[in-house]
Every structure is written in C-alpha cells, then in structure tokens.
Image (cartoon, rainbow, N blue to C red):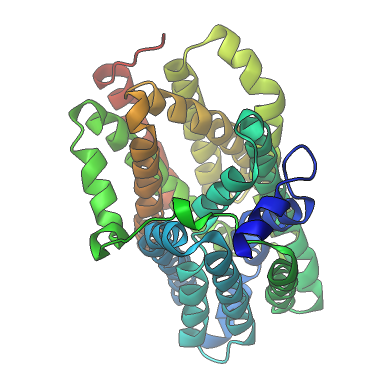
Length: 412
C-alpha cells in the first residue's frame, strides 16, 4: 500500500506531487527562519535570569553555541536514520522536536530551561540534508537542479524574513516570536502527517547501520585525512569561527552599543539574507564571467575584513552608521565567498568524492559555529565590544594568506 502511495505521489506537476512539494518547501523555509526569528529577542529573554551585562553576553553566546553543537552532533545521525527508516518519520519527529524547543524557550522560567529548549531544537534541527534527500526522492533527475534552486531560494527567503518577523512580533512580547515559530512548525507537521507520503522506497533504504555512522567526528577525520584539502579546510575554519561569533553576539552588540529594539535588530540581521539574494541573482553571475573561484573567494574575504573593521570602529566610536556600513560590507563578502569556496572544494576532488568532501566542509562549518560563539563571547566580555570584530580581521587575513600561498585549484 505504501509503495503504491509513493508511486501515485509522483504523478503531478511533471512528476512531482504538489502536496509533498509544499510540505518540503515549508520545512526548508522554517529551517531558514529558525535562527533568525529568535535572534532579535534572545538577550531580552535572558535578561531576567542574569545580574550583569557580562553574564547576559555570555549566556547569549552560549545559547548559540549549544544549539550549533547539538546540530553538529545530530545532523549525521538524522541523515543516516532517514536513509534507514524513511524520510517521513524522521522529518515529522524533527518538526515536533523543533516545535517543542520553541515552546520551551518561549515559556522559560529559568536560564536552564532556555538551554533545554535550544538543546531540543538543535538535536532535531539538523534536517536540511534530509530535506535535500526528500526533494531528490520526489523530483525527476533531469529537473532536480531546478527544484534544488527553489529549495535554496526558500531557505534564503527564510533567512530574510525570520529576523524581521521576530523583531516585529517582539512588540507584543518577547516570547511571541517563539510561540509563532512553534505554531508554524506544528501546522507544517499536521499538514505533513496527513498529506506527505513516504518518498524513500523500501528497496532503496539502507539495510543496516552502525553507531560509527552516527559519529560526526568520523566525517571530520575522513576529509581532514585528504592531504590536498587540508589547507583549504584550514582556511574554511579560520573564516567560519569569526562568522559564527559575529552572528551569535550581534543582538547583544546592538543593545549594548546602540540600545536598539528588537525590530531594528531584526532588520540588521535581515541584511545578510537580502545581500545573499541580490548577490546570487545579479552579482555572482557577472563575477564568474571575469574571475576564478579562488579570486572571488578572496574578494569576498577582503569585503568581510572591511566589514569587521567598520563594525569594530562602530563599537569604539559609538557610531551607528559605521555599524550599518560594516554589516553591508560583511554581508556582501559572505554572500560571494560561500558559493565560490564550495566551487573550489568541488574542483579539488574527483566526482565520486563530492558528497564526502561537501559533507565534511559542512561539518567543519558547523564545528566552527560552536567554537566561534564561545571564543567571541569571551573576548567580548574580557577585551571589549570590538574584540570579536578584530578577531575576525586577524583570522580572515590569515585565511587569505593560506588561500593565496598554499592552495592550488584546478579551475578547468
């Protein structure tokens, strides 16, 4: 019966079931919104449970770090479990977990409760790779690239609207964005429960799996053992550490230096998503005609360095316009660096190693987003509000040197 259901599901819209497609797009959109919708209000939710600004900054960054750590630890296991037991149960359970995390974080009552909410949401939040597998199941091979483009666009839209929605809803109460996120997630769960078929045929499922496959560090060690990629991944880590630090501390930075309210903080976060859409749609196609992947990546890193410099100067001189300029510079650099760097990695290995190295790069990025908030938060507290930005300048200059002098890429 289930196999018939799966076959019938792929007979609409050129081979793609409309209801399954809507469910998947909504899930991707929610993934994109996930961090952004709560980012503008995290410091305000933490404040009742701490006694000093330093403790507030530490709690905010640790909440980000614990979420990233849980995603890092759980994401490989979620992917393997979906290959073994099917996409439907894993995606539905993950949606329930995400909704529970939102609700617990919104209810609060104690600082440890906030951490519990982020842990639960993080453990069930690493589903983006499973969603890509879900879309691979339901789309014809010849049209898959087109649908993957729509998936990426949905994630970008989520990144843009998440902080804006979170900031606006905070006007009705700091917990409202969390409850709104939970409501959307539960609605998507209900929709998926009734309308999403299982998309992975039993004949194509993983026959068995070992605990080793659930270990995220195995993926890291696997790709780090590839000597031709060692320096490339070192550069990746140097870049993502300050990136994770800045995104974790940005809301607290905005409050401490400029006394911004959640609505404006949300708009500041949305700059990153808007720049990404503009760059992918208009700027990157032009850059690719004129520059190699390596040169585009370095160009993006240079813009990030200037962005960090303006953000650091904004804290030193208490000038909000410098902060805005710095955010635009950083967001542009980040938007062109990401795809060009992925292209460099892709061109460094053979076709049968693509999944392995891209997964490894994602694991390094996730691990850096654990380290970044912890280190950045400590620097913010001990050395001042501009210290994480200056850390970014130092680490990215080091990454530029690594890419320029130590990495050779086949651009053909």
